[in-house]
Length: 317
Ligand SMILES: Cc1cc2nc3c(=O)[nH]c(=O)nc-3n(C[C@H](O)[C@H](O)[C@H](O)COP(=O)(O)O)c2cc1C
Image 1 (cartoon, rainbow, N blue to C red):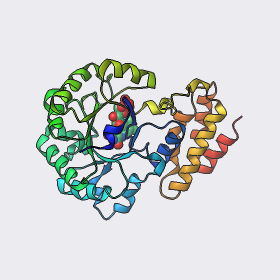
Image 2: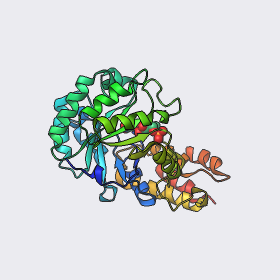
Image 3: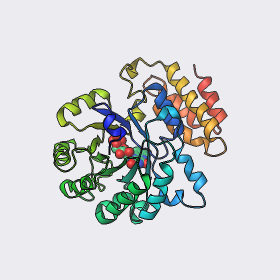
Image 4: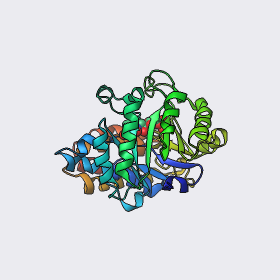
């Protein structure tokens, strides 16, 4: 089945799902200043999406038309829930559905979800199948790691490729490695070879430690995977997807205005629903790379309300 994944440029870029970070508001800011080719929602629990508290969980899946193509990322352990959730998501305007098989968070793994599926391939296959059935025409993809306690690329990635998924994103670390070691890009040639052998039509992205478009160009030439996903690189440079912007040329005023814009969007979207303190974690992203930035960040941390945060930014000179 042909999907939007096949129409993307080569190499294409994507903004990683980052729980607690890449909500509808932050994605909007990124879309406005340098849009990647694909966006993802934060991972969202199937169990939550079929529960009584569904309405609140559904806010994870909000997006604006400018953020398209956007893929909804979901996680869980019950194939029947994936079926129901995929069916609903297929009516919401998403470009695809992604299944999280990589999150190493201890409580989640204990429950058998996300990266625990690396050790339970039969359940992983059932989940993929149920999601495909629920998703109907929407492409189903997977994001995972290269293994659990050690790399098992041929077994695990090979197994996933046999499931005929539309796209696969590989974070080039094992679960045990969390994010504590450098991503193993040296393994990408083996993954590309496997994909070409087992499922040449599956669109393959690599993920881990990518910080710039220049690096993507180099890695594309060296490894030849179709796409590159950037996660934490967005904290260091929110303009990372914009080829025309050198972050060194961004003025302090522009940085402050962008943060103020984020705060304004947050206020419109989340006031009374999310704690304003969540905004403070973006200080490091916007308020950086200028001489007084750390002093300003320290000052911002003292803000006790959204209004105080805004005032401190507005009064900076
Ligand atoms: C704060 C944070 C939240 C994350 N949330 C998710 C998530 O919701 N879904 C997911 O698949 N991966 C999640 N990840 C993993 C990233 O998507 C990405 O795979 C990882 O950070 C490695 O890429 P990077 O080196 O470019 O950051 C998260 C990572 C961080 C740091």
